[in-house]
Length: 238
Image (tube, rainbow, N blue to C red):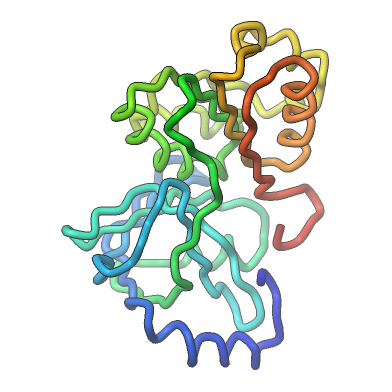
């Protein structure tokens, strides 16, 4: 529900969200001019979280935006997000204005299916909007001994962010439209080694890049694909 009449949001917030703990901003860290790490404190021990869980924030009277949880420690009452401040929409301005001590209510956690333990190899692809999911996936990939690589298409100002977040086995590409080119993707070195059915791809971020990348994988491999376009140029509230 990215957009809805104010009365509907008010009803949902009054009837459902009181069951969700109030979250208070405890840390705000600027990782680049447009990427922030935001930590919240709250009573999260009764909530159920999975890899890739997300929360919906009400960012204005009539708008909600979805953000993936990058890190959760219910015992320490800590929950974190990596957010990309892009464009001039209500989500950007809401996250940009959050300060230590601010409090907010959110939806119950839900999750996109993006991980299965049975696959030996993982390739995770995305952009700035995918960094939180990468952080969420990393502990499972390490603890369950998967072979894994991260591929990101990032703006120049954000290309150091994966290293700041401690994301290993990471290749960063310029955000220049290369992942809209089927032939270019087909020639990437990992495509040949991903032909078997023991590999899973996790594709998120720009919906056009996800669409083209997914088409190439289907044409050239037997790999499993988990995909979710997070945004599309000119599309509001995707």
